[in-house]
Image 1 (cartoon, one colour):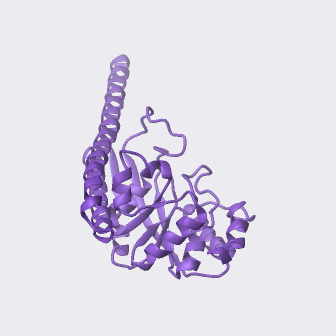
Image 2 (cartoon, one colour):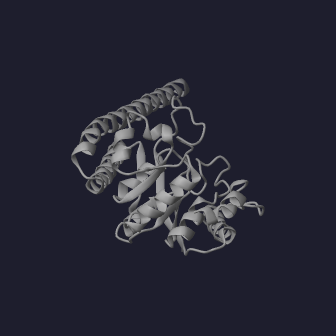
Image 3 (cartoon, one colour):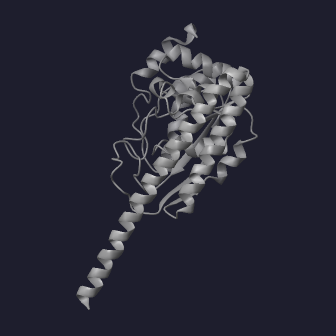
Length: 276
C-alpha cells in the first residue's frame, strides 16, 4: 500500500510537471504569435494612419491582446489574476502609473486594463521584429536617453495618456522591492501629473529576475493588484521618492535603506533639471 501510494504521488507530480510545461510553453508560443502577427499589421498601418490615430488604435489593440493572453493563461487553471483594482484608473485621466516589478508579466497585466497607457521600453525591444512595429505604432517611448525620454513622457502625458513607469527601474532583485529610481518623480515634477502607485503581489518567483524559462513554478501562479497612494508633484525629488518608498515599504512589508533611494542617478537628475 505504501509503495502504491508513493507511485500514485509520483505519477501525479509527473503529470502536473508535464501540464506545467505544456501551459508555459504554449502560452509563450501564443504570445509570440500574437505579437508577431500584430506587429506585421502595425507596420502596414503606420503608413496608412495618422500618428494620432495610429497611437490610439495601437494602444487599444495591444491592451485588448494582452487581456486575451491573460484570459488564455487563466483558462488553463495554471494562472490566477485579480486585476480589477486597475479598472478604477481607466477613466482617471493622465497619471504616472508606478507599480513594483516582481515579474516579466507586470507590464502585460497593467496594460491589459489600461488601453491608453504608454510604456517605457528599451531600444532593443522597440527595434525587435516581434514587438517593434506595434510598439512604434502605439507611440511607446525609448528609455535609452534621460533627456529624450523625460521630454517625450511629459509631452505624452499632456495629451491625456497614462504613463506606465516602474520606479525600481528593473525587475525586483532585492525582495520585496529595490530602491526606487528618480524617473517617476522627475516626470511628475516636469509634467505636473501625480504618481499613482500600484502594488503587484505574488507568492511565486516565476519570471522574476534571473528565472530560467525551462523551470516550471508550483502551480497555480497567482497575481493580485492593489492601488496604492497617489503622490502629487513636488519640486523636491528626494522628498517624493522618500514618500513613495515609505508607502511601498509599508504595503509590501519591507524596510528600505535610509540612504539615497535613487543611488547615483538622483544627483544626476537633480543637477539636470534646468536642462529640461
